[in-house]
Amino acid sequence: MKLTMRKKENLVGWAFLAPAVVLIVIMNFVPIIQAMIMSFQSGRTGNMTFTGLTNFTRIIRDSRCIDALKITLEYVVVTVPLILALAVIMAVLLNDPKLKLKGIYRTCIFVPAAVSMVASAVIFRSLFAADGFVNSVLMNLGILENGYNFLGHPSSARIILMMVRVWKMLGYQMIFYLAALQSIDSTIYEAAKIDGATGLQQFFQITLPMLKPTMVFTIVMSVNAAIQVYDESVNLTNGGPGNATMPIAHYIYGLAFNGVPNFGYACALSMVILIVVGAMAMIQMKVGDRRE
Amino acid sequence: MNKTKYWVGRGIKNVILTIFSLFCVFPLFWVLIAATNTSVDIVSGVLLPGKNMVENFRTLAEHYDVFGASWNTVKYSVVCTIASIIVCSIAGYGFEIYHDKVKDRLFGLLMLTMMIPFVATMLPLYQSYAKLGLLNTTLGFILPSVSTVFLIMLFRQNSRTFPKDIIEAARIDGESELGIFFKMYVPTMKATYAAGATITFMNAWNNYMWARLIMSDNRAQTLPMMISNMITGHYIDYGMLMMAVLISTLPTLVVFFALQKSFVQGMTGAVKG
Image (cartoon, rainbow over all chains, first blue to last red; front, side, top):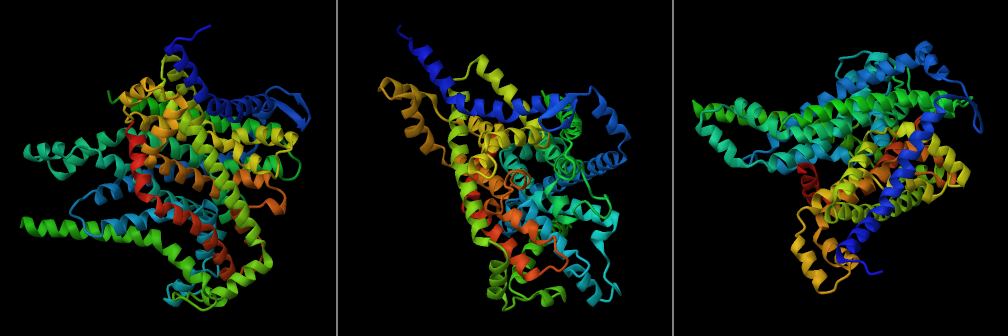
């Protein structure tokens, strides 16, 4: 059989896609379906039985889990908008052709993006340790008499956990906005200036709407990343003091791999995260679509 | 009047940018200082480079397998980056150049994986990998992150700028489809490749959750895992610890700065969409 040009091209196209698509299906869709099935099962690995909604009703009674969900929610609600706002502000400030030292500022703010989350957490852990740098400076300046155990108190530990993410992600997101800003046609601003628009008006009427697609994209990515916060909490505080900085991913990991493993329950909890991430992404996509 | 306003605005701008620059750079500056000082000096708040760098490295090499962990991390990251770049760039090219309704729909479906949290797929993946004997192997480490929608999307969006007339002309000249991809597309998309490679390399280099899960053998451990093990004891030698942080951070810093320009260029194409 002789293939026509068009058909042959189409087949080649599919061949180009195949490896990537097969890998994504095996590494994402198959396990997520397995996780869904396991979330209705209990028992040891290899010997699991269906127990209906038992795992899900257990979530409501599990106060440690509720705490972990609350901590995660607080973490996402604070860090995502904060990083977004700061990244936009930094990008707008840097997108000024007359600004001297632009390259230096940009590089400085961007540098933490190259540091791993584990290393970032370890750096902040060392800086804020009871015998760490921050305490010794505060004591040398006479502000504190004795070192304050920043990571030993729930609220300060949570703030530092958030600070690590802001520190690491600010520059990374700023680059996305800087790239988006540079693609805005400068004649729009000139026209606005002639019409007498103030700087703030230009920001809210032109800059922000133009950045909206980038924002939707980065918010989806950063919500998904922040909701799974794990590397930082393990290496900054290991969830402590008590369970004050134990986010949900950390809790799930512990359920599955510490002590008596409980994969069924761990999977049920991960389904909760899946639903939350999915719902938020849907809302963001809807909001993002409205620009037309 | 207008002139003072201009200069005040300029001043505020610079003050804000300086504060944030310091906030971002200081912890890394401190890592450099700490890596060259003794733990006692670090704790007392020293801010000048010391003479203990070699000693810190010696302590680190004595207590931890820093060479083994570095080699593992390099191996996993490089293999992952190469595999990922090949698989995803050819797919991104395929999705754009040969696009039709079915392929566009399929891409939309794949986009859903961006919303699948890794904690949810991690447990079944771990079970399958244990059964298949993929624990403590390079293949096991890289497989979940070789094909990512993010990277496919990066190449798909940037392929839009690739002129289709060239493809038609090459076809008439009798060039094969694969030949067009490797001889014409790859060389013109250097910025996109740089951006994709940077992101993949950094993600692989810094991977912790998955690494910790499947690399249970000490001989297979990575630098982030090693650093994480260093903070469990009661007494922490900060000089040694920061030396390890420095070693794990330098390669990503170098990659980043070497490819910074192309990174931004490549990303711009992806975000504009």
